[in-house]
Image (tube, rainbow, N blue to C red; front, side, top):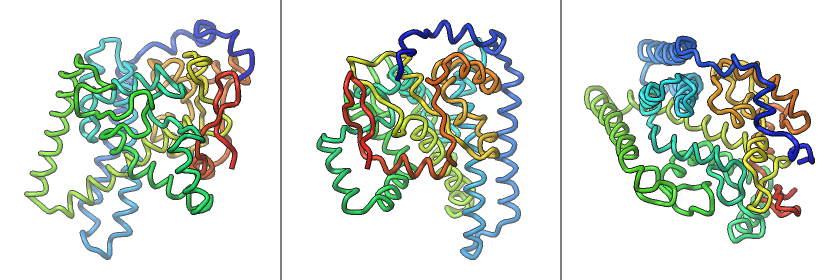
Length: 358
């Protein structure tokens, strides 16, 4: 980062953004909720009534899962916004709506709200960051990854990494804390206490777990009333696509050969927040995801700013931070391949760590 990062402050960035953009409009937010939920339910209704549950229709069900999961990711995004208290100035209203939206997608709302707050508090900290923390290239794990890349080749290694991120990444993170900060080691979103969840989180983690149990029980009763095939086709398929998107989105926001991580000697909150990257999503996906992938830099600096004002606020942020703004103009799939082909970070001096080039 340039010396400019030592000169600019959060207050200066905030002052550059018109203050009305920070104001929350509950009705406007609920319009987004209505859009995401109604579109998801409409696609489910159409599939239930018009796609036969046969093996011959499997390609159609795959297309349905991708489209419906992509739409339903908007529900996840809005639940995430509630976790940041971006829905209402009345804090408990955020938690009520966020709990409903996230638990319906089998996301443990309070548990993930806590871990995600830590992700924002320690963004791009080499050891204390949370989610998609890179390995150090000359560490034991870094050497294993490098050996795997040498054996498989760049293309196959990247494909394996994309599979790990998109399919295995979410459950492994929730269950075992995989890709979490090395300072915390093993963690779980379902057990208290551990290094991620102190004893005071017991009630909230338990509430999240009970919410998940209720949804799983509902799915079980649905299966009993119909068939596993119907539950798999209508719910689990789109659910897996939602998980795919949320891990890909988060991975791409914080993993790039040009974006540094910092150790304890160099890290500051603002440095970390500005070392996120906005990606080039297809317009239809970006709209369905409420632009979370293209306005993520401003989100990390002001996470309470409502999504419907983020695009306008981003214009002002780019003007004030100048060359500190990270944006990738490559298409999404090229960016995903390039980032997935990276192995680990190496020290560049002055507490700055960057991904080693192939």
